[in-house]
Length: 206
Picture 1 (cartoon, rainbow, N blue to C red):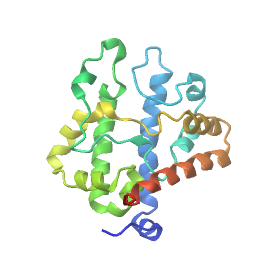
Picture 2 (cartoon, rainbow, N blue to C red):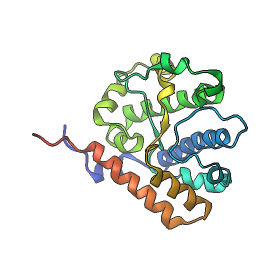
Picture 3 (cartoon, helix red, strand yellow):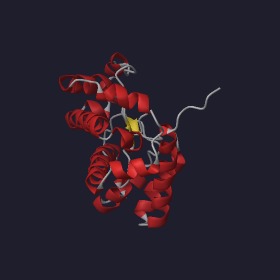
Picture 4 (cartoon, helix red, strand yellow):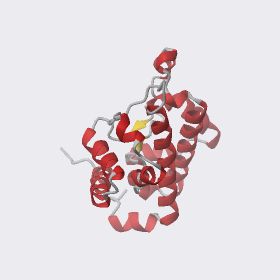
């Protein structure tokens, strides 16, 4: 299989799918924002849990955070790399997983179906749009449709913000959105594109 090129990617995406990605980002980020500023937040893995930054985001600024040509969430839907759902279910009620709430479960299923459709219809673009390796794309596209919801339910505890261990990305992005600083927002968006582009490159031979 030849290495995907920038031209391949450009021809594999359009404004509509980028809009869908932005909408999915917004829905997930809004769930996290509502959770972090709530009186009894459920557990979730975020790089920047500063409530002041999250609470300062209105709908317009949150949409600016969400606007990226790739999903801002790490997807746990690789069929051969299942998350330890038993460990997740053993969390106490005081540490309920945000994705185990009804809105959270619905959102994870929606992400799984979207990722599956992208893998089946736009495999060349999937590594950048979804942040999945080419091998994971092939495995996900082979999953039968009736198995998608069970796959999402088994692995929802593994869903987290992309680059959650990088406070620079999220701290800078949230601050830029609060300040309506388009230049800094673009800087973080572009940094993400560079990181994800490396996924489509073949591993160097030893």
